[in-house]
Image (tube, rainbow, N blue to C red; front, side, top):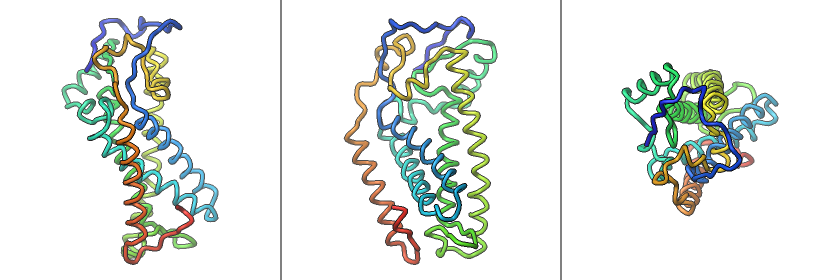
Length: 248
C-alpha cells in the first residue's frame, strides 16, 4: 500500500521523541538483512587475508547461498511486507515513483518502494550467482570450490572469472543502495535504517491496517533449518564433490 504525499521533500515531517511506532519488518527479514551484510563483508575480508583463510571464505560463501535461498522462499511464504507480492511493482509504478521523486514529491511506501524492490531482486540475483559460481571455482594454485571437479577445467576457470568480476558489480550496487538509504534518511526524513533494526516505523508512515501482526518466527526457523540441512546434505553427498568439512 502507498501513501502519496503532496509535500515537497524539503518539508518532510521532522523527528519527534513523542512519536509512536508500528511494526513493519518481521525479525526473520531483519535477521536475513544484517546476516547477509556480515556474510558479504566476511567473504571479502577472508579473501583478502589470503589462501590460508580459504575455509573461512567458503563458510561465508555457504552462508550467502543459504541466506539468499531463505530470502527467496520467504518472499513467498513470509510475513506481510516481506512477500514479493507486496512490493514488486510493474514498470508503470516504477516510472510513477521516479517521476514523483524527480518533481520533489514524496511517495511513501510502507515496505520497499518500487526502485528499492528492484534493488532487492538485483542484489539477491547477483549475490546468489556469485556465491554459486564460487562453488565451481579454482584458483589454479592452492584452493578450489567443492564442486569444481564436477565441471571441465575451462568451465571452472570461466566461473572463477565471473565470481571475481561479479564482486565489483555487487559493490557498485551496494554503494547505490546505501546512498539511496541515506538520501531517504537525510532528505525524506524516513528512519528506514532504524526500521530495519527495530522492525518499526513511525505511525504516520504506517496506516493501522498495514501494521505487521506476526513475524511468523516458527515458520522462519523451520525453513532456515531445512535449507541449511538440505544444502549441507547436498554438498556432502554430491558424487565427486570435494567438501572442506572445516568450512561447516
